[in-house]
Length: 341
Picture 1 (cartoon, helix red, strand yellow):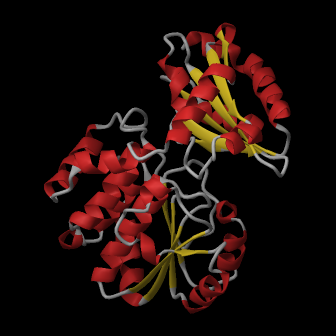
Picture 2: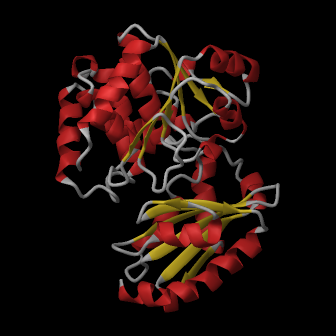
């Protein structure tokens, strides 16, 4: 993965020039969003910068152990504090999103600021809203790109255990435990370096992947038993979570994390989807695929989404049933590709 070294010079120059820095990430922040932002914050604080991490809303409970989480400002709960922070910001870092609309209302306020923006992201087709753009789709995660930024800007001496924990969290969560978008040897050399910084790999996996509730396990059982559809003619399967399912199983933010991967355990399934129904007539969809089937192309075409080759997501303003109908009808136009995989 080749990155123009002049980008790091431009980033370090801006960091040197400004003191008050705000780091922002997308709505419903996942492990990569939280890991990359808190890792970067951990570096900048050691450079004597006044750093604030701002998110549109909260992250799942299994990510709230990461050092620095308690200082994050959440726009939906701390609007006035966030607006004051934005007004005082001299430099923005925008992490793990390719379009400022991914921040929803928070993004509208940030867009009004005249302060320079630095984008660090790995999603395809980024919107050109930043002064400096480190956008590399081959990267496993934004956390990997933050690692390269740390090294390229000459900040390696600040890469301590806490920063390494955040980076490792982002990498393993955004690759499904290194199961997709993780085939480059370079990535494993990065992981080795993080291990050398003293992170406890076993403990991190335990606190991220083994902390779910009994209700979540019962929800998974319900989904697999009642809401699982296999379409062998398309080598595809899908699952769905209704509002009723959520109410019956005390659904919490992050409870469905990882569910979308289950259909890929079926030998002949190369593409799968997980639909989640929302009250506001919106359906969110997560996609996974094997080998070279482009989950991101399917997501972009039918669900206003995008992502990576084997892991993508989107949403559509429609009922759950309508979203499923769109999905099934869309498979016909991808049938030839599906059957070749």
